[in-house]
Amino acid sequence: MSHDNDTKRPSHIAYQVREGEDQKAYFNRIGAAWTHKDGEGFTLQLDSLPVDGRVTIRSVQERIQEMKDAAKGGERREPNRSQNREERRDRSAAPRYER
Image (cartoon, rainbow, N blue to C red):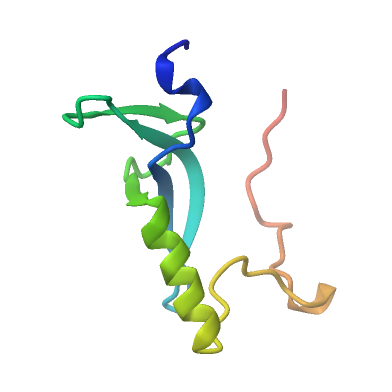
């Protein structure tokens, strides 16, 4: 895809948001959006599609501020990674895909 916005940073980020078992929202970046020059629309580029079909689009500045606020409050929102192997979720029951 070639357009004038290729060299600019996106104005918005597209996320798939899923709720975890701990009632926290986990944002998975799936694409980006650029504002049109006339300000009347966006160009959306998705790198993947969520299974549930729900896409959340947030401004870049809004997410930066949210992360700063979470850091000040001592919250750790993203990334949510286990500290050791015992805390990791068992994946043996997960579906396997073959090529």
